[in-house]
Length: 459
Image 1 (cartoon, rainbow, N blue to C red):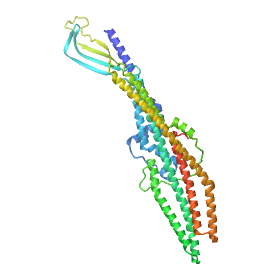
Image 2 (image 1 turned 45 degrees about the horizontal axis):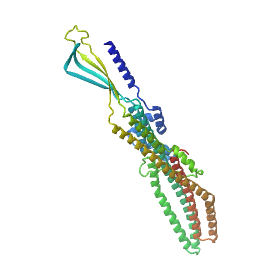
Image 3 (image 1 turned 45 degrees about the vertical axis):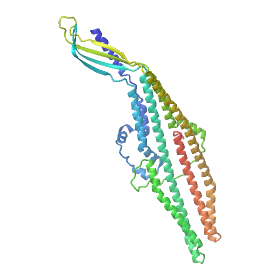
Image 4 (image 1 turned 180 degrees about the vertical axis):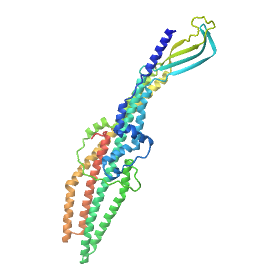
């Protein structure tokens, strides 16, 4: 009896030891990534605020300062799509420990309807505990599948983060260009309005009214342009607020940012494409999907091997009819071993083919994504380079000449050797060149933002 009990205790101890051998994911890595997105307080107040689903609070300073870095910080913290992708990754990370843990042990109980009489007494009831053990390597492979799937979702989080940041920057520079357009139009309108008294005095002195009418028509055209620009401001302000998930009150406008001339550097398309191949989060996510499919194929192969189950039964026994019988009333223990019979080979082959086809699909998606990303890198590189070329052209050549032409035309008009039509043509040329210059600045900065998103945030 003591020998049986000792063996049984040893078996139970070994079983419990195996129960504690579950793999876990890297919690420190999860915490570091969480803090990188939502700051050091993510695990406490920030995480709780996210879980409530409440509308993000508006920091008044965000509305008072037209600061791109502040807008980016606010938008990335509060963007609902990014938070949803982050939560999906966190959920996937929690699954790693679940799939790498042994199945739950099973307790059993049986009551003999008719007592089984034995020499040592009647067997009355039975208690049992059992633990199933997959084939060695199965749990580790399950963990690998979940790890790769979790990493794929993390790279999707990173892809969403970069896309949201690019959308904020594109909307920010569009809004900033509107401010430049408004100021340039106002300045030229003020210039023409200042000429109107001069032309009126000439009309009073006996000159024809043609010049005054042409000037007033041009002033009216610029006033209409300015009114359209002003009416576009709420639209672009709302677009920037939407990119940041900033829910401002109706009619509340963000301040107009200052669009500045960027530092232009040529784009090395080959280098940028190589950066995209290495750092683009979409490609990295697809690569993890491929690894998950390969691990799934290995996992399907383990279905061809049996699973073991170790059990320990305790049978409660009453006293023997003859109380002097040796061992009367002793309760026996029984150690059992069972295994599954993997006989459905066609099912296992189908699971292996399924995983293999998923892997082939992942490879094709990688090829498609590489081709698409290469085309996008080339397109954005062209836009950045072409905008840089136009910035230099307008800044160094066309705008200085248009300014000089306008000044000469103004001087000639005051002396009577130029007409108002000449003055209007010079004004229109300067307006178009200045707007084209700042439009090129906007396109250059927007192209760089999109290019940065394609290359995984690498400058």
